[in-house]
Image 1 (cartoon, rainbow, N blue to C red):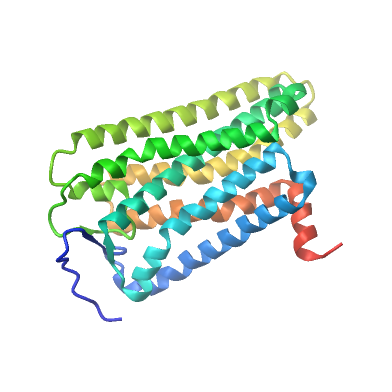
Image 2 (cartoon, one colour; image 1 turned 30 degrees about the vertical axis):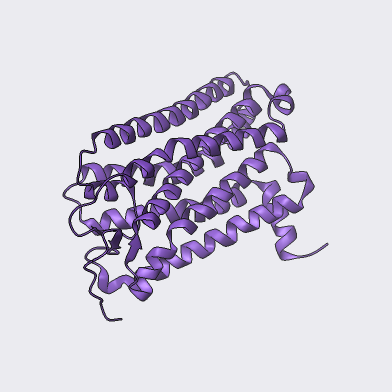
Length: 313
C-alpha cells in the first residue's frame, strides 16, 4: 500500500510509525501478532465460560483466574487494533486524546494485572499456611471486594499521568517511533519542564513494583517455610505443585515486562525495532500462555474444559 505524507498539520495529532526499520515486513509481522491475539481470546473466553457455567468452580481460586482472564482480554484489545491498522492500512495518525486514552488503559490494565497476581499469591499463602481458615478468610464476596480494590488502585495510580501530560505542549513533528502510545515514548515529545511527571512516574513504578513483588516474595517465603515443616516428601511435592502454576504465570508476565522496561530505559544501543517487538510480546504472550498453563497444570479445570468443549452430557 502506498505511503502517505504524514507530516502533521494538526498539533493535536500524533503519528505512530509502526516498527522502525521493519516497515517492509509489517504485513508479515501482523500474522503472528494476530495469531497470538486470537489464541488468547479463545483461551481466556473459554476459561470464563467454563468457570461461569460450572458451579463446582465457583471458588476463590477460579474467580481470581477469571479476573486474570479479564485483564488478559482487555490489555491487548485496547492496544492491538492500532498496530494492525498501521500494518494493514497504513493508518498511522492518532489524536492526542486517543493517544492519552490508549496510554491510560494500557498502563492501568498492567497495574491491575499485577495486583491480581499479588492477590493470587495471597490466596496460595492462605491455602497452604492457614488451610483451616481458608473458607472464612477468602470467601467469594471477599474476592470480589479485593478485585474492586485492585481496579480502584490501578485507576487512581495511573490516571494522573495522562492528565498531567494533557496539560503539556508537544514539540517537534509529533512522530512516535512505535505502534502504541507508551508513556516513555509520549513524554519525550513534551516541550516544557516534565520533572514532576518523571518523578511521579518513577515513584509510581517503585511503589507498584516494589509493593507487589515484596508481597509476592513474602507470601512465597512463608509458603516455603511451611512446606519445609512438612514431614513427608510426597506432601512437599503435592503442596509445591499448587504453587508452580502461579509461579509460571508470574514469570510469563514480569520477565518480559521488566526486560522490556530495562531495554527501553537503559539499552540505548539496542535497535528501536527490538524495543517495539519486546513491548508487543509483553502484551501478547502472557494473555496467550496463561489459560494454556492453567489448563495443563490444573486437572479440575482441564476436566471441565474438556467436558464443555469436546462433548456434551
